[in-house]
Length: 249
Picture 1 (cartoon, rainbow, N blue to C red):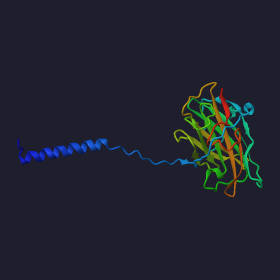
Picture 2 (picture 1 turned 45 degrees about the horizontal axis):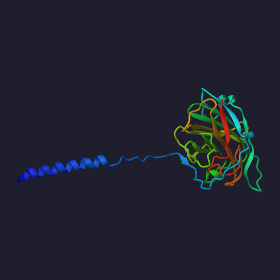
Picture 3 (picture 1 turned 90 degrees about the vertical axis):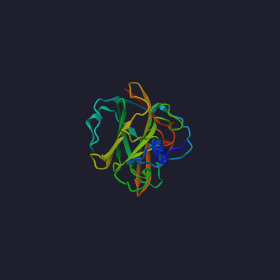
Picture 4 (picture 1 turned 60 degrees about the vertical axis):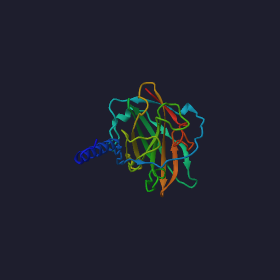
């Protein structure tokens, strides 16, 4: 059966419109978005197991209903948390004259943990391009408490430099991550404060998670000393085997 010329043109046009609609429905959506969170340099190394002495690597942390503020000053809620010294040498240049010292406090809720770190360091230096060579504080979280050889879900580290610029490390997420840094009362040091979301577990009484904190002291654009609470292997950015333990009370 022959179709009139007008009918053929109409049918061809309809088929063309139908095919266009099909292709349009199959085109993937544009998921690109801008990301203003700075990511720290990726560290690559072969994880090495660390034998842990657990005696001085365990803390007990308090739950809080009121969360600490991030307004550039020390919140009174931190008085509920015990103070733990950070004093183990992770790295030190032979000719460096340093006076780095620090402590941390730890609080928790169901969906996040809060960490306050005080740093004694009277030589401010944040000039280096890499966060690892600036005055800064690193916090490491191992949510399942198993101190895994390799980072897995719930393992992450975060950082903030002395100027208050935050960084995402391996496993870190910008979702609900807050941080700030501000001068202390003496003018010879600073506070670093973190809110770190719990990604794979829920905060609850008697839960134990892996945790560590490191302070870097820089001078003239280079790292001169690093002190850490638990792990001094220099591998904490790639393995959780040497971190300490926090028990939620």
